[in-house]
Length: 292
Image (cartoon, rainbow, N blue to C red):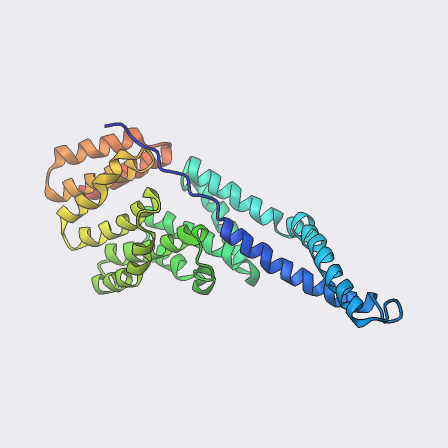
């Protein structure tokens, strides 16, 4: 069967337009208020004329001020923050959670968590740190970083671009509580996540995979291996999602006692791993699956 590629997540135009509109409103009001002192009654005795000039000053000045803010001021203030995040995410994708990448995550989290206006950046670093500790089976530290997420900021905007962050947060909570054996807590997390999962279902295979991957952990914890297989098997057809699906199926077969098929799945996962980090992760999961 020919493999497919996961469609790229589209840029969040709605969130960008919301940001531009919000800042333009601020810039317009600022320039309008300034114009009240610049355009005087002595210059234009007629009140109606003055108001028209006030609005014109606000419209044009607001546009120019917004351009200056976005092209100069914000780049100076946030340029390094954005560049650090971009580098970190690029290296996670290419290298995995290596010690060097973990240092970048710690650095980014600590710097942004100390600045209240950078809560969105801090959330991203926290979610990736939680993901790294889930992969390392250090679930207490994973829970610590997941719990550190600023939920108010996380749910501030309901747009396409914010789906991955909210999905990450929900799925991690289900995953962590499942593998720690706290089934009541896991089921509560699933109930909370269910409306969101239902809303995003079908938007992108990667989103479905993350949601189903967390549900896999719940059914794996309660021993429903048939549901586990049904959840992850559809993703074998996607190049980017095949690795995780193969590892999951290897775990299921090991739990069933079919060591031959389990090793076959783990071997295929190892061969499809895109870097050494994921190859090592595959071997770690194999050892855990067989109790070694």
